[in-house]
Image 1 (cartoon, rainbow, N blue to C red):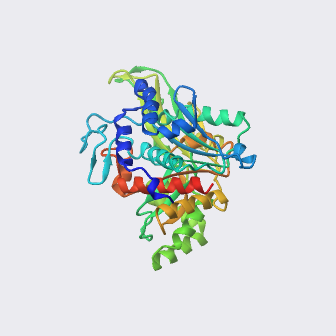
Image 2 (image 1 turned 60 degrees about the vertical axis):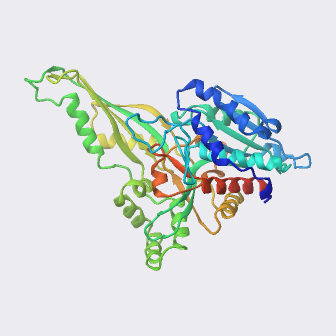
Image 3 (image 1 turned 45 degrees about the vertical axis):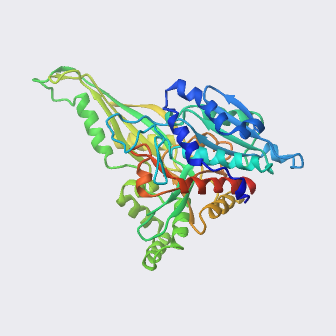
Length: 446
């Protein structure tokens, strides 16, 4: 593996990235970030071609050797990360300055330590270390970095469309998503590497109701606009979307069964034998297990009224819906209309993106990820899953539907996992070191 050529100080490079306050919308800091990358990774910038795409997209092209086959250029690997971060709530109390990049007790603290500068630093370190060794990849590699992922921006979409327009069909796409996590299921006592093979779609819908305005002291017998919205929201609290254990869920349970306790193996065997039972059990558990088996719906905003004693003429509710793989925007809207069951309520789509296809786990690309995980975290269980949030990879799965994956090679304990977008976001230095091994192994094996 050429360990002697690996640079020390990966934790300090991450700390410096954290100190660059690249909060979404902070245009000056975001625009300045590429200069920091150039300083931290001189060989990357000397030997790879950098193209600015849009306002915040960075696309690095690492060409294969001259003896590579012709397909090396048209079937490249696309390795992704983003450098924007979410804001920090000023009322939150952190153990260290959220943008100080503190290193203490073998841990790097700060906003973006995991999401997503931790993944960015291990990828760039791996590339820099391989360049130091004089390595040339066997196929072309694109490093695709965006600065607007947290706002569902268009940077990654522009890059994906650009490569597609150039006739490039990625052999594999790998973005953030899963990680090495603990406590995946009560009956599985060891950590597991969860590799995202798909992600849910996003649907934001505003419910709007109108009625007759008036004084609150003399309400009419008819339902008011607020009554209608309240009734609709109450109906939707009983999630109307069906439960289903998809192909990825079944493969995930099969893999978990190989490492489960004796009683756990029996229970997992039963759930695999009766997928409808598995979907029902997961749905009843709530939170992440439930989100695995059905489209989720939550009311995030309510609006209406101008004064306590005035019946408003309009009222609204904003719904955030995460569409399960195998469903669609159209099917979700149809179910939503039936559940609301009120012709006087209008549904307005604010944002919509279809769920991704489920990428293959029986492919050479997935096996490559497994081998790289084993090199970084020997013996760890690898299992596919559907990512519940959104990533920039959703812009690539249109062009690479079978081989778009989501995995950040970091080991996160439950506290570290909860710190993403929260307080005391942090990552261990040992995870960063292992993450660099993952990417170095993956690139050498393309």
